[in-house]
Image 1 (cartoon, helix red, strand yellow):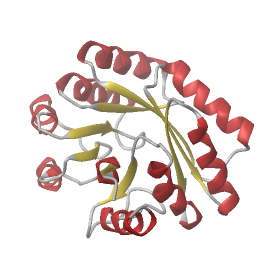
Image 2 (image 1 turned 30 degrees about the vertical axis):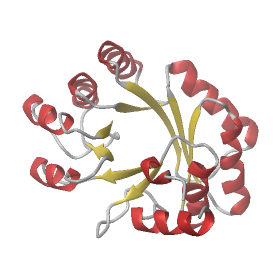
Image 3 (image 1 turned 45 degrees about the vertical axis):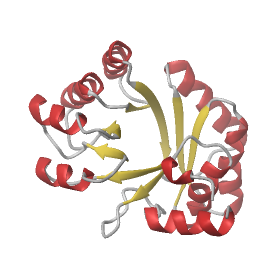
Length: 217
């Protein structure tokens, strides 16, 4: 089988710094969900000095915008391979994080989320264009897929030669997580064995590998 396993990014979300470090052990590619972690600069440095491809992500909700900005900018400066900012994030956050990433060579993921539906094709294309206009190296588009047509519409974004990661949330969207990397997506996300997924419809790493072994022997 073609080695698609390098395209599996394991999403790690834990409640403490110590739990996060333990979860990252033996992972070569992971998303570090910093949403619930108010880390010191020293703790951030320890996490992002790990010799692995790490995506720094801190979704809004728990942390203040100021703290979220400082954590994401800090992760970009301290060794994160990628930093994820939302398409609708505050301009100050975007400017600060993108500047820190540019200075350190960290790559930018600009992400869009719709937890209720999948927009029409024209709107999806516009969303991707907005992601790249903001400065994305990779555009991540995650939408709730209500049926197979929604999943197919998301996969249609892979016709773009730039790096696009289309993700369908919910049971009908699982197909996008399996097929995306086979059709050229830079990577997809998986949950860690034994832990709850960080997004609806997210498969485990083992489930993805099994599906790929059957589809692309």
